[in-house]
Length: 308
Image (tube, rainbow, N blue to C red; front, side, top):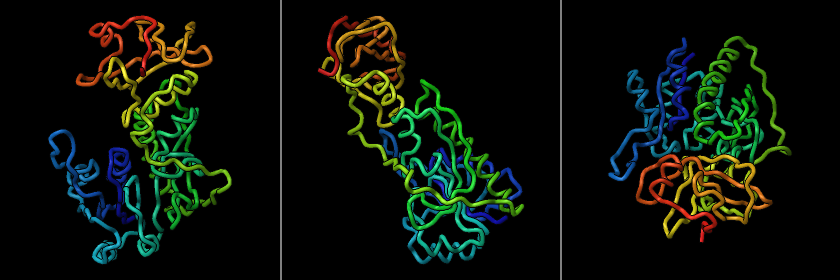
Protein backbone atom coordinates (compact mmCIF):
# COMPACT_ATOMS: atom_id res chain seq x y z
CA UNK A 1 0.00 0.00 0.00
CA UNK A 2 1.28 3.47 -0.90
CA UNK A 3 1.24 5.68 2.20
CA UNK A 4 1.79 9.33 3.05
CA UNK A 5 2.56 9.80 6.74
CA UNK A 6 1.81 13.00 8.66
CA UNK A 7 3.23 13.39 12.15
CA UNK A 8 5.58 15.53 14.20
CA UNK A 9 6.57 14.68 17.82
CA UNK A 10 8.15 11.71 19.53
CA UNK A 11 4.75 10.07 19.99
CA UNK A 12 4.47 9.57 16.21
CA UNK A 13 7.92 7.97 15.80
CA UNK A 14 6.99 4.34 16.66
CA UNK A 15 4.13 4.51 14.12
CA UNK A 16 6.44 5.72 11.36
CA UNK A 17 9.06 3.13 12.32
CA UNK A 18 6.44 0.36 12.17
CA UNK A 19 5.43 1.51 8.67
CA UNK A 20 9.06 1.55 7.55
CA UNK A 21 9.50 -2.04 8.78
CA UNK A 22 6.26 -3.20 7.13
CA UNK A 23 5.67 -4.18 3.50
CA UNK A 24 4.05 -0.81 2.75
CA UNK A 25 5.60 1.96 0.68
CA UNK A 26 6.01 5.40 2.27
CA UNK A 27 6.10 7.91 -0.57
CA UNK A 28 6.35 10.99 1.65
CA UNK A 29 6.36 12.32 5.20
CA UNK A 30 4.70 15.58 6.17
CA UNK A 31 5.79 17.20 9.42
CA UNK A 32 5.87 20.58 11.13
CA UNK A 33 8.63 23.07 10.19
CA UNK A 34 11.87 23.00 12.18
CA UNK A 35 11.65 25.14 15.32
CA UNK A 36 14.10 26.71 17.79
CA UNK A 37 14.29 24.82 21.08
CA UNK A 38 16.06 25.01 24.41
CA UNK A 39 17.91 27.87 26.04
CA UNK A 40 20.14 28.35 23.02
CA UNK A 41 17.13 28.49 20.68
CA UNK A 42 18.90 26.15 18.30
CA UNK A 43 16.71 25.26 15.32
CA UNK A 44 16.01 21.52 15.48
CA UNK A 45 14.03 19.17 13.22
CA UNK A 46 10.96 17.32 14.56
CA UNK A 47 11.64 13.70 15.66
CA UNK A 48 9.55 12.37 12.74
CA UNK A 49 11.71 14.25 10.23
CA UNK A 50 14.90 12.83 11.74
CA UNK A 51 13.62 9.27 11.33
CA UNK A 52 12.35 9.88 7.78
CA UNK A 53 15.66 11.34 6.62
CA UNK A 54 17.51 8.39 8.14
CA UNK A 55 15.62 6.14 5.69
CA UNK A 56 15.79 8.59 2.74
CA UNK A 57 12.05 9.22 2.74
CA UNK A 58 11.05 12.55 1.12
CA UNK A 59 10.08 15.09 3.80
CA UNK A 60 7.67 18.00 3.33
CA UNK A 61 7.27 20.78 5.90
CA UNK A 62 4.61 23.21 4.67
CA UNK A 63 3.52 26.11 6.86
CA UNK A 64 -0.07 25.42 5.80
CA UNK A 65 -1.90 22.51 4.21
CA UNK A 66 -4.26 24.96 2.49
CA UNK A 67 -1.49 25.89 0.03
CA UNK A 68 -2.40 24.75 -3.48
CA UNK A 69 1.12 23.35 -3.94
CA UNK A 70 0.53 20.96 -1.04
CA UNK A 71 -2.51 19.48 -2.74
CA UNK A 72 -0.57 19.16 -6.02
CA UNK A 73 2.25 17.38 -4.18
CA UNK A 74 -0.16 14.95 -2.56
CA UNK A 75 -1.85 14.30 -5.89
CA UNK A 76 1.55 13.46 -7.39
CA UNK A 77 2.39 11.14 -4.48
CA UNK A 78 -1.00 9.46 -5.04
CA UNK A 79 -1.34 7.78 -1.62
CA UNK A 80 -3.76 4.90 -1.08
CA UNK A 81 -4.11 6.16 2.48
CA UNK A 82 -2.83 9.07 4.56
CA UNK A 83 -1.82 8.21 8.13
CA UNK A 84 -1.96 11.06 10.65
CA UNK A 85 -0.35 10.78 14.09
CA UNK A 86 -0.01 13.90 16.24
CA UNK A 87 0.70 16.06 13.21
CA UNK A 88 -0.54 19.30 14.71
CA UNK A 89 -2.35 20.67 11.66
CA UNK A 90 -5.96 20.40 10.49
CA UNK A 91 -6.42 18.64 7.16
CA UNK A 92 -8.61 20.47 4.61
CA UNK A 93 -11.59 18.55 3.24
CA UNK A 94 -9.99 18.24 -0.22
CA UNK A 95 -7.09 16.33 1.36
CA UNK A 96 -9.38 14.20 3.53
CA UNK A 97 -11.15 12.95 0.41
CA UNK A 98 -8.02 12.47 -1.71
CA UNK A 99 -6.76 8.94 -0.84
CA UNK A 100 -8.56 5.79 -1.96
CA UNK A 101 -8.86 4.54 1.63
CA UNK A 102 -9.21 7.96 3.21
CA UNK A 103 -7.19 9.50 6.05
CA UNK A 104 -6.67 7.47 9.22
CA UNK A 105 -5.71 9.00 12.56
CA UNK A 106 -4.10 7.26 15.53
CA UNK A 107 -5.51 8.91 18.66
CA UNK A 108 -4.23 8.32 22.21
CA UNK A 109 -7.53 7.68 23.98
CA UNK A 110 -10.48 5.34 23.99
CA UNK A 111 -12.76 7.46 21.85
CA UNK A 112 -15.21 9.08 22.16
CA UNK A 113 -13.61 10.03 25.50
CA UNK A 114 -10.84 12.62 25.44
CA UNK A 115 -11.06 14.07 21.97
CA UNK A 116 -8.60 16.91 21.44
CA UNK A 117 -4.93 17.74 21.93
CA UNK A 118 -4.26 16.49 25.47
CA UNK A 119 -5.85 13.04 25.87
CA UNK A 120 -2.93 11.40 27.67
CA UNK A 121 -2.48 14.14 30.26
CA UNK A 122 -6.18 14.59 30.99
CA UNK A 123 -6.77 10.88 31.45
CA UNK A 124 -4.17 11.01 34.25
CA UNK A 125 -5.34 14.36 35.63
CA UNK A 126 -8.86 12.97 35.94
CA UNK A 127 -7.70 9.83 37.71
CA UNK A 128 -8.67 7.35 34.99
CA UNK A 129 -7.51 3.77 35.59
CA UNK A 130 -7.66 2.78 31.91
CA UNK A 131 -6.96 4.39 28.57
CA UNK A 132 -5.77 3.26 25.17
CA UNK A 133 -5.44 4.01 21.47
CA UNK A 134 -8.12 4.33 18.80
CA UNK A 135 -7.64 4.32 15.04
CA UNK A 136 -10.34 6.24 13.20
CA UNK A 137 -11.31 7.65 9.84
CA UNK A 138 -10.79 11.40 9.78
CA UNK A 139 -13.58 13.81 8.94
CA UNK A 140 -14.20 17.53 9.25
CA UNK A 141 -14.97 17.44 13.01
CA UNK A 142 -12.34 17.23 15.78
CA UNK A 143 -11.67 13.52 16.44
CA UNK A 144 -15.28 12.68 15.57
CA UNK A 145 -14.75 10.19 12.73
CA UNK A 146 -15.80 6.54 12.71
CA UNK A 147 -13.73 4.35 15.02
CA UNK A 148 -11.84 1.40 13.56
CA UNK A 149 -9.73 -0.41 16.16
CA UNK A 150 -9.51 0.30 19.91
CA UNK A 151 -6.91 -1.22 22.23
CA UNK A 152 -6.88 -0.48 25.97
CA UNK A 153 -4.20 -0.55 28.68
CA UNK A 154 -4.37 0.07 32.45
CA UNK A 155 -2.91 3.26 33.96
CA UNK A 156 -0.55 2.64 36.89
CA UNK A 157 -1.38 4.20 40.26
CA UNK A 158 1.82 6.27 40.23
CA UNK A 159 2.36 6.39 36.46
CA UNK A 160 3.03 9.85 35.05
CA UNK A 161 1.61 11.20 31.81
CA UNK A 162 5.08 11.09 30.24
CA UNK A 163 5.49 7.41 31.14
CA UNK A 164 2.02 6.65 29.82
CA UNK A 165 2.84 8.62 26.66
CA UNK A 166 5.71 6.26 25.88
CA UNK A 167 3.60 3.14 26.36
CA UNK A 168 0.75 4.51 24.27
CA UNK A 169 3.08 5.46 21.43
CA UNK A 170 4.16 1.81 21.15
CA UNK A 171 0.56 0.62 21.37
CA UNK A 172 -0.34 3.15 18.67
CA UNK A 173 2.10 1.51 16.25
CA UNK A 174 0.51 -1.91 16.85
CA UNK A 175 -2.99 -0.51 16.32
CA UNK A 176 -1.86 1.20 13.11
CA UNK A 177 -0.40 -1.95 11.54
CA UNK A 178 -3.46 -3.96 12.58
CA UNK A 179 -5.71 -1.34 10.97
CA UNK A 180 -3.78 -1.42 7.69
CA UNK A 181 -3.79 -5.23 7.65
CA UNK A 182 -7.56 -5.26 8.03
CA UNK A 183 -7.93 -2.75 5.19
CA UNK A 184 -5.92 -5.05 2.94
CA UNK A 185 -7.93 -8.10 4.05
CA UNK A 186 -11.24 -6.32 3.62
CA UNK A 187 -12.18 -7.05 7.26
CA UNK A 188 -12.05 -3.52 8.70
CA UNK A 189 -15.26 -2.44 10.42
CA UNK A 190 -16.38 1.12 11.18
CA UNK A 191 -18.18 2.13 14.36
CA UNK A 192 -19.79 5.52 14.78
CA UNK A 193 -18.85 7.47 17.89
CA UNK A 194 -21.44 8.12 20.57
CA UNK A 195 -21.36 11.89 20.87
CA UNK A 196 -23.41 11.81 24.08
CA UNK A 197 -20.56 10.06 25.89
CA UNK A 198 -17.75 12.13 24.39
CA UNK A 199 -15.38 14.39 26.34
CA UNK A 200 -12.79 16.96 25.35
CA UNK A 201 -9.12 17.14 26.37
CA UNK A 202 -7.75 20.63 25.65
CA UNK A 203 -4.08 21.56 25.43
CA UNK A 204 -2.36 22.07 28.77
CA UNK A 205 -1.43 25.56 29.97
CA UNK A 206 0.99 26.86 32.61
CA UNK A 207 -2.00 28.18 34.55
CA UNK A 208 -2.72 24.58 35.62
CA UNK A 209 0.60 24.18 37.39
CA UNK A 210 0.00 25.45 40.94
CA UNK A 211 -0.75 22.72 43.48
CA UNK A 212 -3.72 23.18 45.82
CA UNK A 213 -3.31 21.29 49.10
CA UNK A 214 -6.92 22.05 50.12
CA UNK A 215 -7.80 19.17 47.76
CA UNK A 216 -7.55 15.49 48.80
CA UNK A 217 -4.14 13.86 48.28
CA UNK A 218 -5.45 11.71 45.40
CA UNK A 219 -6.36 14.81 43.38
CA UNK A 220 -3.02 16.45 44.18
CA UNK A 221 -1.24 13.23 43.17
CA UNK A 222 -3.15 13.03 39.89
CA UNK A 223 -2.22 16.62 39.08
CA UNK A 224 1.48 15.94 39.66
CA UNK A 225 1.31 12.82 37.49
CA UNK A 226 -0.71 14.49 34.76
CA UNK A 227 1.46 17.60 34.40
CA UNK A 228 4.79 15.76 34.34
CA UNK A 229 6.85 16.60 32.15
CA UNK A 230 5.13 19.82 31.06
CA UNK A 231 4.00 22.27 32.35
CA UNK A 232 4.84 20.50 35.62
CA UNK A 233 3.13 20.87 38.99
CA UNK A 234 4.63 23.66 41.12
CA UNK A 235 4.64 25.06 44.63
CA UNK A 236 6.29 28.06 46.24
CA UNK A 237 8.94 27.10 48.78
CA UNK A 238 10.93 29.73 50.70
CA UNK A 239 10.18 32.31 48.01
CA UNK A 240 11.26 30.12 45.09
CA UNK A 241 9.47 27.76 42.70
CA UNK A 242 9.72 24.03 43.28
CA UNK A 243 8.61 21.77 40.43
CA UNK A 244 7.23 18.38 41.44
CA UNK A 245 7.60 15.60 38.86
CA UNK A 246 6.67 12.49 40.84
CA UNK A 247 4.73 11.70 43.99
CA UNK A 248 2.84 9.02 45.88
CA UNK A 249 0.00 8.94 48.39
CA UNK A 250 1.40 8.94 51.94
CA UNK A 251 -0.53 6.81 54.45
CA UNK A 252 -0.57 7.19 58.25
CA UNK A 253 -0.08 10.96 58.14
CA UNK A 254 -2.53 13.72 59.03
CA UNK A 255 -2.22 17.47 59.36
CA UNK A 256 -3.49 20.72 57.93
CA UNK A 257 -3.39 21.34 54.15
CA UNK A 258 0.03 22.56 53.00
CA UNK A 259 1.78 21.62 56.25
CA UNK A 260 5.10 19.77 56.04
CA UNK A 261 4.37 16.59 57.99
CA UNK A 262 7.70 14.85 57.53
CA UNK A 263 10.89 16.79 56.84
CA UNK A 264 12.86 13.62 56.07
CA UNK A 265 10.64 12.17 53.32
CA UNK A 266 8.87 15.37 52.12
CA UNK A 267 5.31 14.51 53.17
CA UNK A 268 2.77 17.35 52.86
CA UNK A 269 -0.72 17.51 54.32
CA UNK A 270 -3.81 17.71 52.11
CA UNK A 271 -7.52 17.95 52.88
CA UNK A 272 -9.59 15.17 54.52
CA UNK A 273 -6.60 14.16 56.68
CA UNK A 274 -4.73 12.84 53.65
CA UNK A 275 -1.11 13.44 52.67
CA UNK A 276 1.16 13.41 49.63
CA UNK A 277 4.83 12.44 49.42
CA UNK A 278 7.03 14.21 46.86
CA UNK A 279 9.38 11.76 45.12
CA UNK A 280 11.13 13.81 42.42
CA UNK A 281 11.55 17.60 42.38
CA UNK A 282 13.46 20.49 40.84
CA UNK A 283 14.18 23.69 42.76
CA UNK A 284 14.45 26.99 40.95
CA UNK A 285 18.00 27.37 39.57
CA UNK A 286 18.86 23.73 40.26
CA UNK A 287 18.62 20.37 38.50
CA UNK A 288 15.96 17.70 38.75
CA UNK A 289 16.61 15.20 41.55
CA UNK A 290 15.12 12.73 44.02
CA UNK A 291 13.21 14.55 46.78
CA UNK A 292 15.41 13.09 49.50
CA UNK A 293 18.53 14.41 47.74
CA UNK A 294 16.90 17.83 47.63
CA UNK A 295 16.12 17.70 51.37
CA UNK A 296 19.73 16.88 52.19
CA UNK A 297 20.82 20.11 50.53
CA UNK A 298 17.81 22.16 51.68
CA UNK A 299 16.80 21.17 55.22
CA UNK A 300 13.17 22.04 55.95
CA UNK A 301 11.30 22.36 59.24
CA UNK A 302 8.46 20.05 60.17
CA UNK A 303 5.24 22.02 60.54
CA UNK A 304 6.20 24.76 58.08
CA UNK A 305 3.64 25.80 55.49
CA UNK A 306 4.20 25.33 51.76
CA UNK A 307 2.81 27.66 49.07
CA UNK A 308 2.89 30.65 51.44
